[in-house]
Image 1 (cartoon, protein in one colour):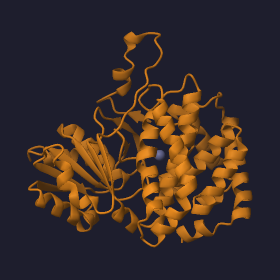
Image 2 (cartoon, helix red, strand yellow):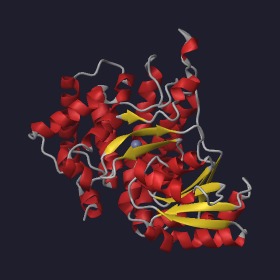
Image 3 (cartoon, rainbow, N blue to C red):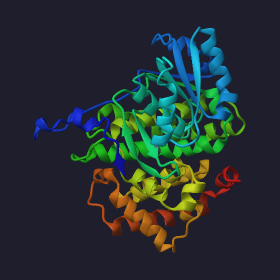
Image 4 (cartoon, rainbow, N blue to C red):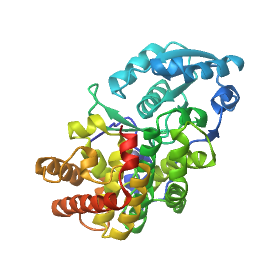
Length: 399
Ligand SMILES: [Zn+2]
């Protein structure tokens, strides 16, 4: 796991001259968050908050033909010029630098990144290098990328190589729920898997006096409360929101879950801290058949169950697994195309989890045997919950 050295938040918030002083509390957030039906068409009004005149539009080729049309119409109506830059699918340093080179002499005063998590993360890297604000328009509610001031960086071949932090959060995040509702159900459901981890990870980070957030600070009460509100919203509205997106309909449940997946989870993870759930999840990406076939939030769902087993909270794990099964998230290894007897795959996950930078946020020393037994116990729990609840939702989502 490499961290880009262009900007290191730890050096700003926890400079070495603080010596033995306790860590400060740091809360990080975008300047504006706007969510609702049709809000992308009003992008010109939103950009008037920052007086942008000429913007770069980072989108995939497909995005340019779909939501890109509404975006360009909105910009045109507001008298804002736009320069398209086609995102090629991977958030690599090479891809980011290609856009920076193409846009350097274009007189851009803002970058708009519209797309999935990787496009959004690339847009943040492009804006940072061009020295402009970034505006984010997510087209999926599957991940935590929209609100944060960091990007997950991949090699051009798609292997996760590290994280890049930025001194500025996105200036504006515009989430058009008509666009989110038009995407396949699986993306919203995966976002729920990612979002559910937020509360459990921020909680252990807060309770552990040595726990640290993504920027090396202490969690705020605010960020942990957002994580808790996120989990409560998921339990209450998740199933109804999945049913709504399955028929491409926006209702109050869908609005609630889009906010949980994007705003509550995004702020909660960045300022609340992550722990074992994301360590286990990122380690699954090292197994090619898992990496190729499953979404981040689906791996985080399995990681969350493993973390709760590490915390010796089997009843809470069972409650979460029942929710995951009801919305169609994986709850046992078979639902990630793995087998509990495949010890070399488990070795990879155990090793990756032990090397995860935030694993020290867990309340107890994390050993190889603890991780292995947590994964195996979570798998066993998942099997028994699947027997009870069934796997109809999982099978429907995964075809
Ligand atoms: Zn995540």
